Structure formats: structure tokens, C-alpha cells
Length: 533
Image 1 (cartoon, rainbow, N blue to C red):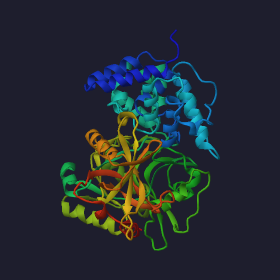
Image 2 (cartoon, one colour):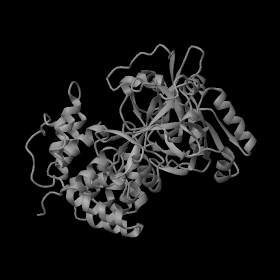
Image 3 (tube, rainbow, N blue to C red):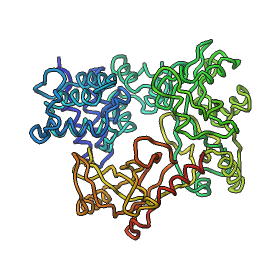
Image 4 (cartoon, rainbow, N blue to C red):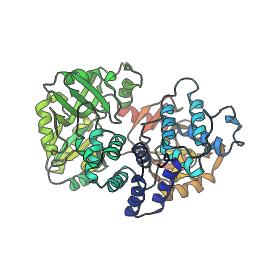
């Protein structure tokens, strides 16, 4: 009987997948691995190769990961961490997948005073017997940077090949189960017939359908068809509301149970005239004037503790819905959007329906777009009337359109990257110019999003030529390079000296034509924040 699967075997497959550009060859490499694994190892191997920990977020920060990795790779170079001892005995060979999974579970539960050092010790003990490529794989997995040309869609195709089942049947089973691991373990132990037993059930969260993104309304409409539904895009917390009999549970987009934190939605669902239902929508906060509050203020109600955090800016927390996935024992995910919307309108009172209109022209769509922005919301989502609910995917059936917001900011520092960014400077530290002192800049956050491989190469060489000093994995540079940053909004933040942070910041382009003296100021950032409240 074969022994337990070790991480080294998974990393070898990942390396082989990365080295080929052929999608068929990638599938073949993955299929070969999956076909010989035991059920428990299959669950973990497929999750890791899909870029998922199988445990959700393990709450490991970039700096903690880098410190642990360097303490293992260069034990004599980092006296700063000499007092951090690995947790438990150090193994002498690559850890098994089960051992990695146990470490992830331990990391998830570390909290309180000294948590960072405890996490570093756990990681150091886990990494100690690993080869360098195993440590790189683990680091990329933990920070969500695994890039090998084979994430979830391809992994599912390879599993389907290995077990001779239809990839679409497998994907739907994962959608209904809300867990990749659960389905794979059942498939490995019970065979393909097990897939038909997965169906949407109230109480089990379903991976939400996602929308593609566009920045221009008219061009997006041309791709969607002659008649489309236009919905307001609310700036709230994405939730699924599940009711089965008298029991109600609320889940976030990440499938986290927040029932205890969303009693407004619980009470709403209990008054619906249904036996069971799964609703997809948003929780939005409204201020005293009936305007939506900033996303950050809303998120203060959803702390990880088991009770909501009060926020005096929020007068009402309102559930608003745009889809229905299950109703009284029947699955609706395979029905068209038009049919699902009709059912939704029969089930819910109009104040709890996301505003929607079916349009046949660009001017009609533009009117809905302008109305959404005027009401304080983000933009609109275009939806094809015949689109089914494709959970966990950004299909062509939905497309969100929001106004593009950009700032020209100064690069203050960059961090050495992991995964495919190994050996390159990444994760830019971004600063806004002080309106009074041209030599001072206020940090607004970090981002590595939007950087192509070529941009990474060029940027690394350029920033190293501007190096001022180093602090561990951070290279501080002279503040002279300007970069245009696109983002979704500005929120208050106690973590940066500016007092603000950018939401979902990404690099749009470098601005060699601009000097640091032409970058946006902190006053510009304050004005943006005030205008969107």
C-alpha cells in the first residue's frame, strides 16, 4: 500500500504544469497525479494545486511568511529572529499533505498577544525540512500568489479526466456543496454516481456567481445582446440568506457564517412565506438621510467576534436581493435569469429588491447607471436574460460597470516577491504628496495587482537603481517614480500615516512623464473620500 502523499510530489507536479504552455499537457500532468491519490490526499492536493488552502484564510501576513522563510534559508543572517523557535520537533523530510493541513489549521487558531511570533515559529518548523521550491510553493499558496497556469477550472477538468466524469457535472457538484474538498473526497471514495446526489440545500452555502468587469458601459452592452437587465450595483456586503423551516443562516461571499452578526436579515427571512429558500444579495447600511454608508463603516458591523460592532453612522441595515437559487425544495440555478427574477419579485417586497430594469438601448442603460450613482451606489451590473447561475465563475452572463477612479501616486518602497514574482520587486508602497511639504509623502497602502512579468522586470531594475535603504524584505527607494493607480474607493485606515487606504488598488500604468511634484496630494485623497460618503 502506498504511503502518504508528500508536499514534494505536489510541488513537482506544479513545476511540471508551469513549464508547459499546453493546456492539454497541463491536464495530463494533473490527471496522472490525481488518479493515484487516496481520497483524503486528493482533497488536499487538488485544493493546493487550485491555489486554495482547503482551510480558508489562515491569516498569515506577508512579513511573517518572509521572516519564517528567511530564518530557515539563512539562519545565520537573521539574528532578529534567533529567539523564535520552531513549534514542535523538526522533521527530516518533506511533510505529508496531512501534516501541512494540520499546520494550516493550527495557524488559523493562533491569536492574541505574540500571535505573529507564534505563527512564524509554526511556519519555520513546517518549512525546515522543505526544499527551496517547496517553500516557495507554500509561501505563494498562503498569500494567494500561486501562478502555475492551472487553477480551479483546470484542476476540476483534470479530476474529471482522472475519474471519467463530465467536468460540468463535477463543477455543479462543487457549486452545490460549497466545498471543493467535500466533493473530491466523495468522488474518490464513491465514484461518479455520487455527483448526482449534490443539490442546492438551504443551510449549505453555494459559491456565488461573479461578474466580469468593464469600465465602459456602451462597449459592455454591445457584448451582452440587444436586450439586457440592468441592476444597480450596491456597495454592501455580499450575502446568501438560507432559510429551512424556522432556521435561518447567513453566509458571506467567502462562505463564512455571519448569522449572529446579521440579525436584520435573519428577521427578514423568517417572515417570508416559504418552507425553504436561498437568496443572493447584499446587506447595505443606510445613514439618517437614507443614503448608503461607506463600505468600511458597514464592515465595522462584521467583526470576527461573535457580536456586531455598533457604528453610530448606520441607522438601518437593509437586506437587498438580486437572485434566488433554491425555493421550497427545487433548485433554480439552472433556470434563466429572467425566470429567477420573476420568482424573486413574487417572493419579496419591492423595498428589498435591488432596482432593475430591462433595457434595449444604450441611453436606457445610461439612465439606470446615472440613477445608481446619484443614489450613492457603485454602478450597475448588466445581466443576460437567458443566463443561468454559474456559481464560482466570472461568466459572460454578468458584467459590472463602475466609474474608473485613478490617482497618480509616488512609489515609496517595494517588497521582494514570492511565487512567480520570486527575485523581483513587487508589492509597491504607494504615497500621496503632502500639500504643504513637497519632500514629504503619506502612505496609502500597497499593491502588486496589475503588474505584468515585463513590468516586474523593468520595475525591479529601475527601483534598485533608486534604492535608499533596506529593512528585511522591503527596499525603500527615493520618492521620484510616479505610477497611475486605479482603485474602487478610499476608506479610513489607522494603519497608514495618511489616515486612509485605497480599496482594491491596482497598477494601471507607470508615468515616466510625470515628476513626484506632479503626483496627487493628500488633499485630493481627502476630497475623494468626502465625495463618496
